Image (cartoon, each protein chain N blue to C red):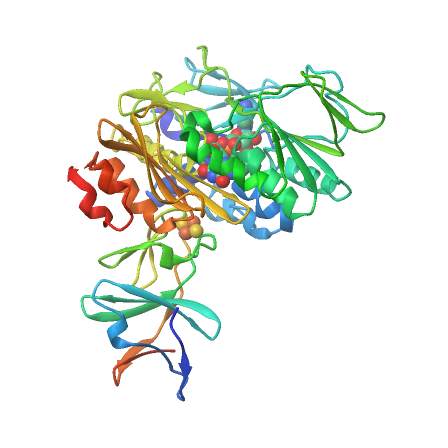
Length: 406
Length: 108
Ligand SMILES: Cc1cc2nc3c(=O)[nH]c(=O)nc-3n(C[C@H](O)[C@H](O)[C@H](O)COP(=O)(O)OP(=O)(O)OC[C@H]3O[C@@H](n4cnc5c(N)ncnc54)[C@H](O)[C@@H]3O)c2cc1C
Ligand code: FES
């Protein structure tokens, strides 16, 4: 059969793509793996870009595949090559310059792209930064060298981490956020207020319910103009207003992500998606998760299912962490709906486990400087444990004794 | 963290035996290096106290039999050998020699 000589193709040498390629080899696949990335770098880690990397700069540990790692893995990597379209009938991927490569099976792990503010007046002024790639981080770092006033547009996780890093570099930082309370939709009022307090207690200002409408400056950005006619002086602007899925056209609507089943496979047989761009079934709901742990794990599961069709369902509990100032936040689970929030610990003192509960089940948990609790809480969620909410709120009662039933 | 008191033969006394119960772990510094000591099925094992993936302290993690889980990205190691059992790294943990004598735990 002709397909045997065709490679497994991976679009995107990011977190999910690299994880899948490594897993294919770990699982014993010895055929050709051909990987494309539109960027110029071998796989590197992204989370440090808004944390250590901004503070400390070049650090070789940021590369996931340094030196000859791709050669050791025997993966052919084509950098600077954007794949525009997938020809499902001929089973080939097609680059923007028209070149095509056949595949036996395909992983689309092209991740997400940043929402941009390109339509605003002054959006092309130097000093306005976005943060997604290593190159973006290097440029931002350079620009921050001489900056005093930093304005961050969007108080999401990346915006918050950049704010913390800039504060630690001695900059004066202002965040501008459209919502009434950042993080409220995912974390609820109390935890959201706690995160805001991390910034505000250090003098990092958060302007909420405000929209940026323009940037101005002569040769570089100097001012950020907001809808309520506020003018915020700025030497550097960092835009962190979220991401949308990105990737090649497969002849179907994908603006909400590539829909996959529990094996990571799309409707087209042998065509998979993993990471930021995959819409996958989690507890009866299709969701998209834009976090590192998910990208690693879904990439790994897809590799197994490529070699052994419909072998291992992807049943991970979503997880992410975020480091801001001296606070480690860890969030497990996924929910936008809960009927109760139980706080175990002392939120004001910056050490607590926040439980999101629906029908007595823990559906998500936020650990604030309580790393020891993350694995137990993850177990609660995966076992659908029913809890006694009153006991749960009492730190003196061991976690085990708060269980009503599994 | 436990006091550590240096005694000849390169072995360093790091803790009292009774401070480490079955299935538990303690962390200490041995020549400034963080070390995690576990007692599994009555035997002692000592591995690096810092995850080989990315800096997280393993004492924040969890021990399940021989399996030691890191709390940051959930790498899992075999405490007997330091080998990676699952997770985002393939770098094993450094291991240390550990003995128990005169009611104390010693590390080299
Ligand atoms: C600054 C920053 C900080 C973060 N911090 C955290 C954190 O603390 N915790 C956490 O859990 N998560 C964090 N994340 C999120 C996490 O890094 C992502 O969820 C993860 O990288 C997603 O992996 P992926 O493989 O889906 O996409 P990516 O890692 O983004 O990789 C996708 C790759 O595909 C390439 N590509 C895109 N389109 C094409 C195309 N058409 N053709 C060829 N190549 C293409 C891109 O160049 C890219 O290299 C952070 C992300 C960023 C940017
Ligand atoms: S630091 Fe331990 S798994 Fe990442």
